[in-house]
Amino acid sequence: MLEEFVRPVIRKASTVNYHMLKACNMSCGFCFATFQDSRNQNRLKPEERLELVDVLCRTGFRKINFAGGEPTLDPRLPDMIQQAKSRGLITSIVTNGSRITSEWLDDLAGCLDIIALSIDSVDSETQCEIGRVEKGKAPIDARQYLALSELIRDRSIQLKVNTVVNRANHTEDIRRFILEMKPERWKIFQALPVKGQNDARISEFTITDSQFERYVERNRSVESNGIRVVPENNDLMTGSYVMVDPLGRFFDNVNGRHNYSRPILDVGVIAALKDVVIDTDRFEMRGGNY
Image (cartoon, rainbow, N blue to C red; front, side, top):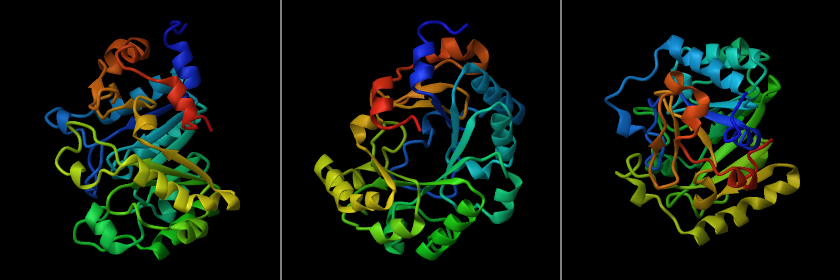
């Protein structure tokens, strides 16, 4: 039986975000999940990652979201998605979309419920300024994103778009593009400084609360077409996620940097979850249950 401390956390904050690897094929300057503070430590072995997914599934979480880094760089990602789905969880990934193909999607038929595409802009200069581009390649353009959205919808997978609002894109109006993409949810984040994760370049990308609010208001009218807009400023993003790092530890960001629990596979979910702070009220305020 789950202890009284843990039961309400999992019941209210029912999604666990597993940042399964820190590697990425892009280099966004504001990324808060670089895990530079654990770069000299090895991540879990493939069998340990599958065991961790199984442990999280048995604990009572309703949904698992695989993130990174770029999760599709891990060849075992499909195995983990299939395992989570077989345990009855809603499955989701956050991806830059660069490695998603029709064949990859077909292999996960019936197992992957949600894909969140990280799209900050469709202007190539802005994407390059942000770092939302693979080295030696051109940025993904609007036409390619729209084709990818069709592949996703054709397989009855729910489509989300995640956008980080920052100094490079905060004046943009991308309503026409979003209306063409037709995601069910558009999550709009304010670029978040996290010590030890994005110190090197975050000063180039931070914006004021009012700049963030103006971006949201400028683009919000897509809601009239049935697209749910979910804004998350820095305050809402802080402490409102249940997150697991590549080493299999819960972590939070309540003090402006990552605070890590003891390894989940060593001490169990209950003990490890006590090591971090999860603000379930903020989780609910940002619409985390869906």
